Image (cartoon, rainbow, N blue to C red):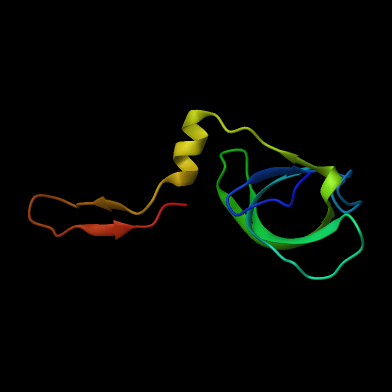
Length: 101
């Protein structure tokens, strides 16, 4: 597998590292170019829940061959790409910016 890129969603299992006996979904922020063992990489990103919401920021050290890319459905992709949304509280209130994702 090529090094993951920012925004990629991966399934991280025991095949990537023994610490992942319980698989997690992981959205990549950055793949470090730090020197490591051959076939291993440091990744920064977010652990995701089943709704694809970030639940924890993590740095993980994993084997590239153990990572599996997750194909996102259209609704999940829209959710991950959602930017700030503007909401109003009523007729006479000013807009409030709410950050989603």
